[in-house]
Length: 308
Image 1: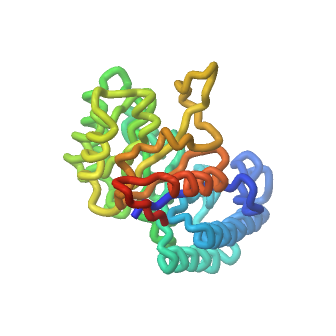
Image 2: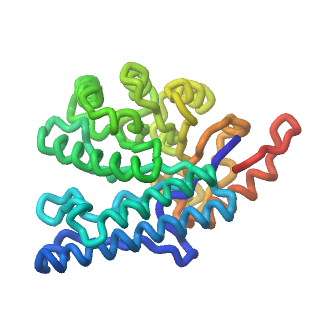
């Protein structure tokens, strides 16, 4: 059964996740910092529950959690442990309650850390910071039951083959709490599915197939073949990404995402599959709900597709 996913934030719904910056936090005394951060973390746990309730009430089967749900937690100066925050254990319990609710409602949860998470970097400090951030994601993922922490391959650094070997070594050295959730996604500038699939097979890391990125950076394989090969890398329900490009001058060739999904951009081969499709569209929940309606009008082999 096809599961559509909402990514991180809302367009119209009054459900907001708060952020802060290290620069702002560090302006204040430590006690005030911790009060401020605890307030944001508590608010975000409550907002996550609201987001999950919205998904449950509107037949949206997956939700991507914003990576800043515990803001600046890994920052070298402004970072913190939850145990140091006023009411920290209670905030953790709030997240665990979200996880129980998500499981009860069959809502799949995932993370997609920011672009600076570069396990492929030749700089040890960059990899060290990436590992710290992945450890944070894995901790929250454990609380809420998220099964995917998705990252990009990063740069090629002048040697794509050598960089992929380096990335594979870093992946094999990851703690199991990260490894068993980690996924790799093809991007629109450097790494195609053809580049990543051998690494995914060798390391046991699933490929998150982004079909829009594949159209931007093709590799000679069809969507149909790549879908099949990507599914083979998963030991659980596959998760793919879908977006439509901005149309400029009547040409759909832009890397940037459109507000909505053009139904023509939805691969017909995905219909009828047991997969999660995260909808990466700027209109957020409006785009997911519109796509649900559009998909209901499609028929494959005379059978109307069921959606969750």
